[in-house]
Amino acid sequence: MDDFGLDMEEVTKVIESAQVLVVRFAIVDKRLLVDTRTNEKEGPFIGVVPKAGSVEERFKSLKRLRPRFPLPEKIMSFMWPRHMETFRNSGLWNRIEERLVSLGGEPLAARCNEVFDELISEEKTEVLAAIRGGEGYQSLWERPR
Picture 1 (cartoon, rainbow, N blue to C red):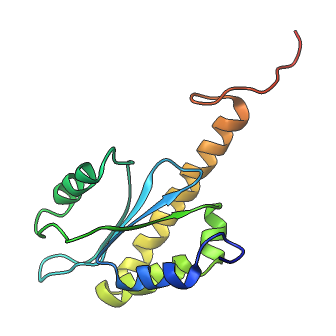
Picture 2 (tube, rainbow, N blue to C red; picture 1 turned 60 degrees about the horizontal axis):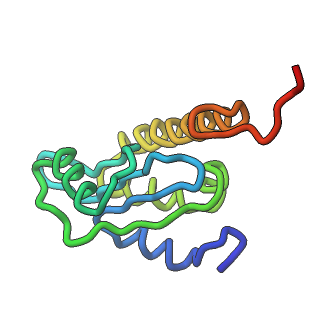
């Protein structure tokens, strides 16, 4: 374990070897999906996807997203316990981006930026909902009227 609460060496191995990777986040309910498989018609995939209710549901949603590919033997996953900026600062995001660009070329760098911006936006929305006592959150105190 290190400052991030993870075995960073192990997580790096997963990022560098997984065919399909799902990253779960402590604050954001959505998931980062990375599929490194390629063929003559399609390059790798990166996107923000809804949380799956089960492993079976995740495999089905992957099949819908990537119908030209057979189901992978396994989907690797890890939980990121901190904020998105910390994810980027940890170097893990760069590893994901480098791997995708090496497989699919420079256009994937722009796609990675879009996805990261989407994750940042999701996180901000969630934090604001928590502060304001939005749906799924309860105020610990309220100002007297």
